[in-house]
Image 1 (cartoon, rainbow, N blue to C red):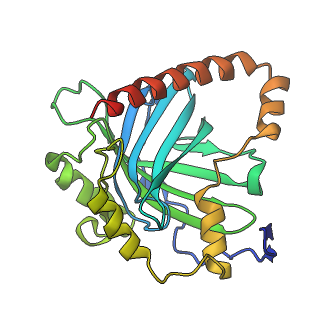
Image 2 (cartoon, rainbow, N blue to C red):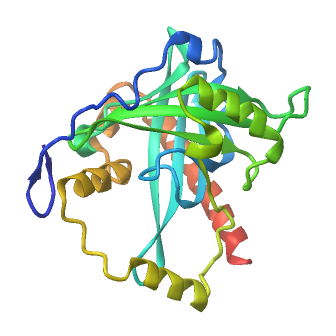
Image 3 (cartoon, rainbow, N blue to C red):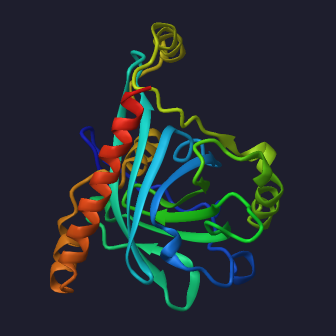
Amino acid sequence: CAVSDMSCVPQQQDDGSYPVPRDDQVVPKFDTKMWNGRWYITAGQNKLFDIFDCQVHFFTETEPGKFFGKLNWRIDEPDGEFFTRDALQEFYQDPNQPAHLINHDNEYLHYKDDWWIIDYEYDNNPTNTPPFAFVYYRGSNDAWDGYGGVVVYTRDAKLPASLLPRLRVAAEKVGFDFDKDFTVTDNSCPAEQSAEEKTILREKFAGKVILKSENQLQAQATRFRGNAANSVKAQKLFFDQRQEFAQKAYRELDQSTQDFEKEISGK
């Protein structure tokens, strides 16, 4: 179970909503060099985990098949303010399935996430297609076994309309209808919300109670699964003699985040 400030919350069991994709549903090859620099999540499928404002993520590949990501997102509070969450995560590529990217060995809730690339396009491709990655994921932790979702990563902060035909095909491959099941996110990332926006949010959340149900607690714990210090992973990096890679990645990602914050502070 997952221990909250209220009780020991029973683990929600896998209901089969997000099965492991078949080999014919994922790309046959993928180079993790794609995961460098700034990417935005511009559309998402799961309303619990995928659809937040200002989802700007920074990646750096430390060696072929291994990369770190600093995942940033913004959550609205009931009083109309927002707060920002971020998580530093390490992924490695499955040597037997290049489309499979693995993030395991996490202390917080013992969570493990698995990503699969359903479709993608690199930077500077010959067809001038806006670079993107259509990522299907599923995971497990002490609170929820078998959670999942789908996100679209793009270099552009706003989803390029020219990608829609590709995204519709990719969504269909994993059992979704892009036009019905996905929501486009807002990555304008204003430095501060207007008084009118705050009023709307206060009205939106008015009358709602504090998270109390098991399902809500399970969802909340899963949503913030990466937002925790991870001593188990740190120890693993040390004994694998890869702490220098991690430190370098952290410095690069931290600098990317600072540069981005300076950009949006000027809006």
